[in-house]
Length: 123
Image (spheres, rainbow, N blue to C red):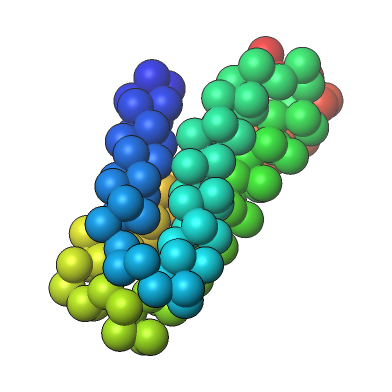
């Protein structure tokens, strides 16, 4: 699990670096702030999930993280589609977004299956 903690933190740091490198135009800064907010919150939600008091709370925190990942992907797409950042520059961030989505979806599915088989107890 510490690998995912590190990975979501590294993702947040990459989003921060992207934001600081954006042009100072109004549209770049507005879209960039949105990406900054959502992209840096994913790791926080994951860490909150690890401290969850119940399986339901764990699932809820992960699902919020998934929403933030989806939103981050949207803002990255807008940065490219609006020609603020070249699509090639965002390729690796898009790929990491997809991979993190797959991992968190898997975590949620596993937790939901465990909830069914263990009567709702997380551990």
